[in-house]
Image (cartoon, rainbow, N blue to C red; front, top):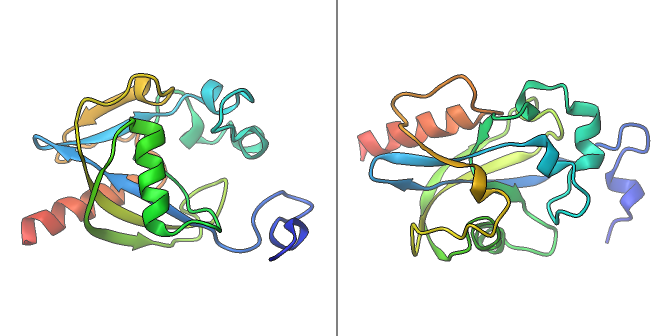
Length: 172
């Protein structure tokens, strides 16, 4: 197992390798679920999803401005499979289970995310229920959007993921 000094740059605190991330497209009645990002939540050290160490440098970045929207997702931990990460993300963020419907695509541009250069695997996911838990900090910021009428306040390359999902659906 690698030591933390071997995978995190001591100067900039960025990963030296390219971590794997999973982003989920959850569609229902022609709409797609997005989460509005609130930097106050992400910078709160009492929150189990605390990302403050990485966000303090990047808080001025447009993707961390209050109200920007992202697909639900997380980093795949070293000890997890991709399926574990999907199920954990859905359970933690939405409070439900479900099943993977298919692969939307793999997104690997090195500038896709200002806090890491992770490779994202975008998955179409169908939850067991669309009555999501309101206990999650993130679900209080959930919105359903029309994928054919996307706004400019969608962070990272998530707009590209949604567009690819729409194109794949039209072609199938």
